[in-house]
Length: 150
Image 1 (tube, rainbow, N blue to C red):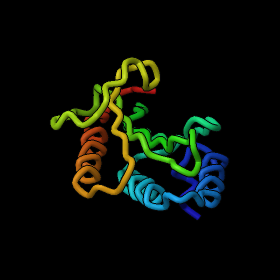
Image 2 (tube, rainbow, N blue to C red; image 1 turned 180 degrees about the horizontal axis):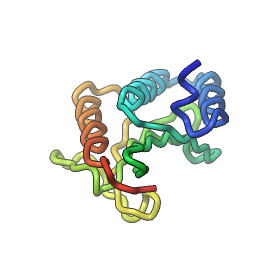
Image 3 (cartoon, one colour; image 1 turned 60 degrees about the horizontal axis):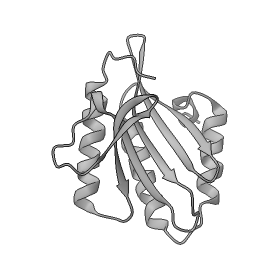
Image 4 (tube, rainbow, N blue to C red; image 1 turned 60 degrees about the vertical axis):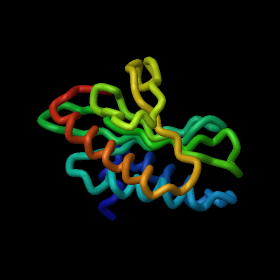
């Protein structure tokens, strides 16, 4: 099974799988969107994942780019879990690797590993917003090349 190798640890992979298998809430659309973002991130070369669970707060899939010995956290897909029956996503990026030309994100001061960032909240399926976020993911990935951000 190759997928666990994309995670920093097998435990992270297993915990994510347990979370996804238990995700039965009324909002299956959000789960599908989460899985689509995970798939986009997994297609990018040199990306490894961390999984961080803060019970009752958020479940976080963190994507880091490893390039020539540098590791850069460039994207987070958080499942906001304050109400498991009504989960939503917050897709976040350090501000040094992403732009927000349409002004759709929220600037988060020192909110991503002590750095400023942008978070984009996803409450429902919206194809144009999804495309915009996919563009932000690809931009953040490209701009993180050679950076050391943790």
